[in-house]
Image (tube, rainbow, N blue to C red; front, side, top):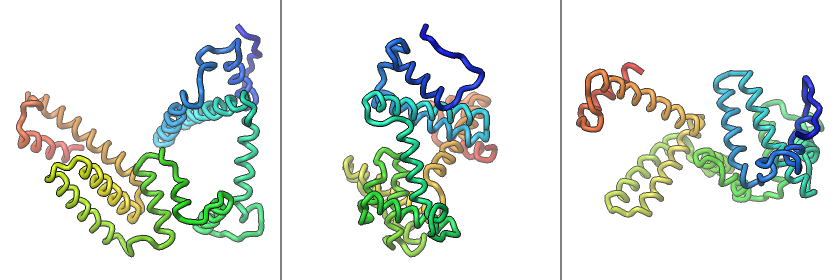
Length: 265
């Protein structure tokens, strides 16, 4: 067992020291073996668990999950410190300077009385500091690793800011019909590659409609998935109550169960 001072309360310096100890020769074999690549998915998982705590409005869980997310940030920072590249203080320094630069209405003389003005200034400063001169360069900065619906909505928003957009939602909705017809044609032709392309175009068009009505496409799809799950569970329950084997039931029987489930959940 390594030497360690146990305390009633720990702060950020203790947190960093613990992670360094885990990574040390006398620490944990698993922690020592990890790389940025080996634990990168953990960062995504912990982020979603933070979101789950927020959705549940569970403050105790949120406190715990924020700690788990911070652990991932400390973990990656310690790895870079071991290589002599940067440490956690550098991370804090960088983000602090970024916040000061991007809030000139707080730390400077720029006037911004509304959230829209703040966001406009933020984007302009971000593009300037990143050396982005075109909308395409701004789109390029949106990580491809984002969930596809989220990335699509962000790309569309960038285009809309320079007027590359439908005048109203009617054009977006009509585009959904157009893309649906093209997907149907691709299916009828049996062209797999074209089917995938047209399906992507259809999804992109639906996301565009979501943007017009002010909905987050990711959250909308999550809500629909939850609704389907609830109704399907009720269908299974009704089928069991009536001795119906879902695998051998006709489509008409399942439709009747589904319609009934819709009235119940």
